[in-house]
Length: 173
Image 1 (spheres, rainbow, N blue to C red):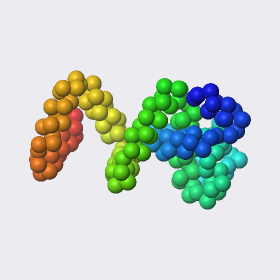
Image 2: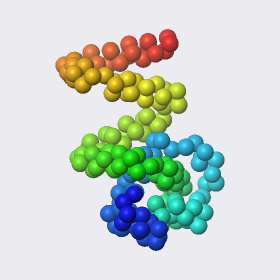
Image 3: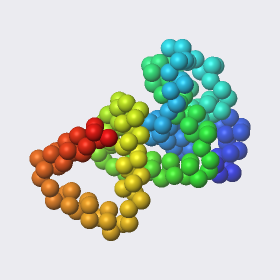
């Protein structure tokens, strides 16, 4: 947190751009939320939030009571995640958020839908996908580029067949 943001947060105020950024970051990181909040009561009143959560979620205070309970829980999970982040992690989250903002509305909707699909998967399948992504990211850039080129040259039917084969192989593991 920069010195200006820190002072604003300490005083209970959050600048408009900082609050929008924090709110958007919360939405972007909701996939990492803790299941511990699932046991919380259906209603989360503003006064039940910790002071740190209230500072992060301050832009939403006026409309908090009108938000659905599921949305409140998701935002609290995101706030907790944000609070736990160090400066480097917050900077990375801001960069991801900026990339998301630069996408068109249709592409953002695709990203949102894929996130929802991912979140609906069982935990072990989510972990397998994270591991696969990590493995892909660890490849040298030229290998990644070649794999991307090969994938893009395949027809939709070929891609579907390959994905089905991969799923079958995973099922046998």
